[in-house]
Length: 484
Image (tube, rainbow, N blue to C red; front, side, top):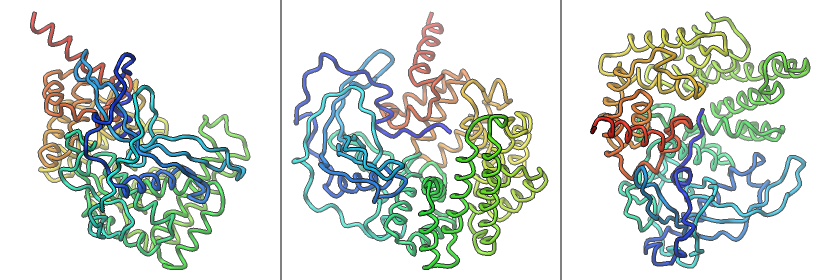
């Protein structure tokens, strides 16, 4: 899957430094500054994610607010200067031997995401942070999680204080990751009862982000992240969780995820003939433990769609029969017909590397779309091919090599954009596919509609071999040809 890159990361991928620019001044940073609480929370979120050992494996100090200026691509050949706030802090993380490796300065966004600063002018403006009390948070702001928590953003918020650029309220990867962050913070602070409540709430599938995806996917991200811990301490945390709720769905899924990740760690990522006999032995024994955790919890955990997605992952790795895997998928989609990530989980196993084929994936997609209500057929077609594109190598074209229909995908994107009008993420990906399909007219229209908001997700929505710059250049060349 292509990594998600948030606002400043996406911008950095587009920018070149101002080698001859004047030093940044405080006036350029504007007069609207984030609250001190926002700065502290962002630092805490980053620290919670910086070590698989959890907060106890990280030290941090000297948190400071920084204003940076960079050049931004304003058009195909034009650049403009922009400013934005970030946070610098010194971080000291324990290595695999339990030893601290020394403090190192990290630059992060206000969302707690680490940034790679390639070229910029900067000044430290910590003293100008907004120290007035921020709006009082309630559990309603955090989908039922009591503060401290990561709240849903207010409509009309600014992505960078002082810029006047509107921020997508709860859109794209950022929206899903907010659910992940709240789950991570609850787990790290051992607020297991609240974490169970959040997971149960999201399992009702009523909470979505602005692009129509379910916030339950943020819980899946949390399980994948927390389950990467390389020691048995995590299993101790699972037991602590169960001591408060013996039928905790989250605890059962995390135990299964732990053994699933441990199995792949023992196997390694190489080709089958490169795996040592000991690696295969550990791989299958740990997968059986993951399967056991899921089987033991089925009576209560199968009320959550993630039980089925995790079970499909484990089944695929264990090489169960195609009939058994199809049977499990059908059970899941019958119980949760609207949870389209279940289709993704089954599609993943139809890839050629798992013994499937491009034709098998295309046939599955057609079958799913045929069974959908008429008003959702177009959207489902687009979402499924969008997912296949994400899991396919860059050199594979879903249009040229796999038989996807651009007119049908385009109709689906139009429907998605109509149903989810606040989503920039949908329009960004729509533009990306239009570029790759050779539909320059649609690309230029979307490029114009999204405007400067392309800096939000441009790097994530466009694959490396069809970058935003490449698509802009292609559209420019086609326009020149048509004008002659």
